[in-house]
Image (cartoon, rainbow, N blue to C red):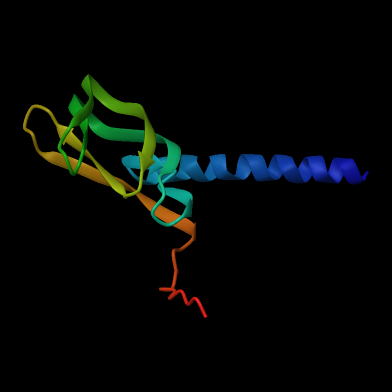
Length: 130
């Protein structure tokens, strides 16, 4: 009986986040999942596999780009939705833009934030020999 309870609990835990992600995609037309990367210590690289999903009401030509460098990461021709996987490896947050490749206008923005388990709170230590 105890193992059945644990199995049920684990099944509920494993399906709960997926349901939340589906709701998040339906509410917004441009999302990054997960939208937060957690690193152990402040100042260290954070690693995550980011899934970027977008949806538009009309078929068109769209591109995904890095909002800071304006580097085009992926383009879709005659599509109204798309998906892109990104291997996040950074010490800074990153923002993404979905643009209309015909007009060059930015349609939507999303970003991946960083959080740390431990912040650097090192005090200046003065060493004494005596």
